[in-house]
Image (cartoon, rainbow, N blue to C red):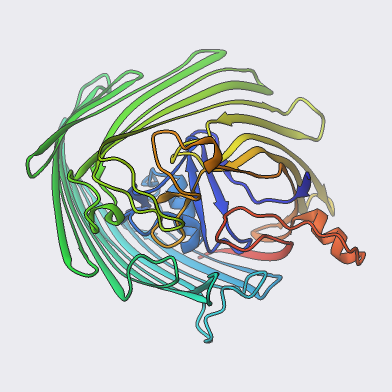
Length: 546
């Protein structure tokens, strides 16, 4: 059976990021990065550093954390300005969705002070997120101070994130009680052609999961410390060279305390269109090389990019705490490339990604049904290929078409072999140009879906759904799913700095419900999460200056 659905799919073409939510309120979900599931991967939002062990969905923490995750380059061009800006954003929708976000920023005399607060209340389609209290299921607070004077640039950032949310459970109503506190401080100083940088990050997490799939009972504690330092040189032609070091420590207390320490020495440089890095990651008796190579060339009509990234990181706590692996470090190699052509109104590009994940394991415990593989080396291969076409040559219409294909029989895949996405958008004005209106409609297809692995909702690591574990799952260990088509729509009106937006999620289900049809258009994304239905949201946003 094929279904017509609306789905909120955000894709950043330059970094190929997709947010796949388990609910329309964006409380839970996973990230597909360059065609592979993102897990056990540290990430950054603005200057806040997140350990990726039990925190891998930026949307959970609000709009500013999401925006900072997508845009990894902080804007420091406005330090010479003097102004005060502020905003608020309020969303209300079906199933008691209530989101509120506010922020304020002061710029003046080389200083930048910023404050942000976010809260989300949401029951979910089946009331699965209720926490039996008046407390919102998500609260986020951040504050930062930066100063730039002469050759010095320094600052401090703080963040606190409180998740107190129900979660669907097959036996009883589950509960997630997750509290994260983050701090960062940095200092940059320039000495002519030389520049030094020191950055210190601290990540504290208290994680309690009352759920039948939780491997551990009681409260878990995770402490992550990171210290970075480097010395850089910039030549007259813009060529740069950097030598640096990084120290990491991760302490986790579950049933017992486990400490993991690792460090990295690296040398990197930028020359014209080429960027390269060579490093050595060291942990106890392990020494593993790390390599990064990026190339981007923009011709008059054509552009080409290539990236080779051999990344080394510690094993996930889920593996190490129950003694699944003898080794501390794992390796993941990613090769991505893009080739494209562009004109004034058109752009065509072809992309490709190949992944190789390598680990040393003793055993794997599969919480869904169980299963233990043979000891030794484990290697998982994954690939993703895509095509994108953008045009503004059609009058009054912008169009963006994307198609991608990926393997589905490995732990790096989200199980959707073919993805189809067609976005259309039109712009017009009303009331003699005082109101600007955007109307968008998109059609998305998830085709040839199958489940061989899924993201564990509590441990946040891909696990086998149906028993058995190997480099490639057996044919009968996967479940084929129906093809799904997504349709979404929104209308946004702008009057000066005031914005009002109306969104429709799962338009077909909205229509079927409104006419009282016996048919329904719900669909399933995750085997342990309830099916998604319909959602309608109204959003108000207002920005202020001075």
